[in-house]
Amino acid sequence: MSVIRALHSQLLAKERSAEEIAREYLERLTQLEPQLKSFITITEELALQQARAVDARIRAGEAIGPLAGIPLAVKDNLCTQGIRTTCASRMLEGFIPPYESTVTARLAAAGMVTVGKTNLDEFAMGSSTENSAFQRTANPWDLTRVPGGSSGGSAAAVAADQAVVALGSDTGGSIRQPAAFCGVVGLKPTYGLVSRYGLVAFASSLDQVGPFGRTVEDVALLLQGIAGHDPMDSTSLKVRIPDYSQALIPEIKGFKIGVIRELLGEGCGEETRAAVQAAIQHLQELGAEILEIDCPSFRYGLATYYIIAPSEASANLARYDGVKYGLREPADSLLSMYGKTRAHGFGPEVKRRIMIGTYALSSGYYDAYYLKAQKVRTLIKQDFLRAFEKVDVLVSPTTPTPAFKIGEREDPLSMYLCDLMTIPVNLAGLPGLSLPCGFADGLPIGLQIVGNALQESKVLRVAYAYEQSTDWHRQRPPLEKPKESAPAQPKAKSKSGKGSKKSKG
Ligand code: GLN
Image 1 (tube, rainbow, N blue to C red):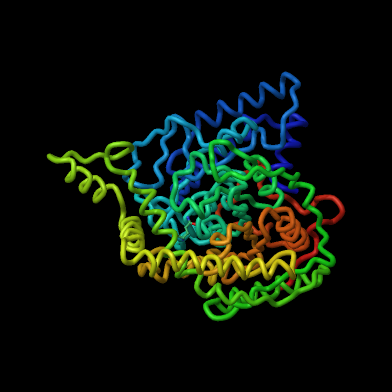
Image 2 (cartoon, rainbow, N blue to C red):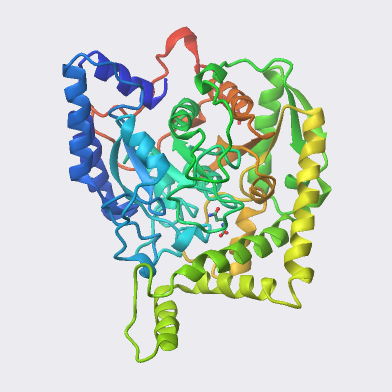
């Protein structure tokens, strides 16, 4: 059973109050924070107030939805009214948004309990959360390693039970990659399915908000809470939102699953390949038909992304000029105020992106770089479209290797390589999910499942069938044990022996 369902039934049975649950999570969160540093801001007062409101509704005999009273962590690039939103940047260190993002507003209305704002790479640029201007988050499985990024704080918080579920954003892999590194489930929805209103923009044609959870069902339930049209986001899709729980059927007989050949070859670590191949075999044993699929343009994915994303970033980040938001360095002229503010406000990776993007968009280089990248983006999209004529979903590793050591990847290019397998999915605007599929030396490995546009239900179904017949999601990081009363483990006691079959490998 998902953590959300377990807590929901305890609330309904009045075994525990939402306030008790909130206090327990806040206590554990605070206790683990010195080791993990997942959070930039802890919102204890808000959490308790939201929890008490849920308790009042339960006492009054009102019906509550599944998300009510559930502790939530929010990536610190989602605007929260009255609560500082830093993007892990000095530029926004003191920024208190005057408005609330649509996703957090919806979840608050559903009764969720926000425990805090999580650490990230500055402006979501990075793959290790080391680019945060404030702190480094540790991987709960090995404190000397990175949690992935850029949503590293959200992934670590969920892996360590500092929150039940979390929100992240994914522009090139920032939900799926940290989910893989931290051994949790993370989903990047179809571009436009979830509102970006109040998400601080990085690369607007790629950015998408999505859920983290310990199980596929947790992720499906949180997705349900955030998906849907929003008039405040012009790229938001007007589509009917299905009931994602209906997709959670542990049965995929006859499903056609494509294995992306290009992503299991060069660049993929040995242990990762072995774990993913075992997972593919497992899917076959569950009755899926496995096909090998060629996506020849994927080899240009990284190069394409690292033109398009910085180009959009250079435009989006022009707004941080010392006038409109956040930091302002005093100076004797307007020009030097701009210069000083941006020199002090942005870290090295953000500056690098602004420079790459400005260069790629500049006259004389635009055609050679930006325009060309847009054309290759179309080719990558076509690879996917061709594939989905033959298969229901595609699978690959989420990342080439498991979590690396803090400080190990100083060269930006080696960091960019982390996104090799996730980036094509963003370029094509498709849904992609990562879920645990094994371990190498105690470090989690992630399996990526990709669907055609708006096929989240299919992706969730394949993920659910895999999860329910394996045990990877029940492994816990070697942090000190949560207290007896904590709702931590979704035990194997669930009905009909689900999840009892151990996966091999
Ligand atoms: N690691 C990628 C980058 O640095 C992706 C980041 C993201 O998805 N926000 O651009």
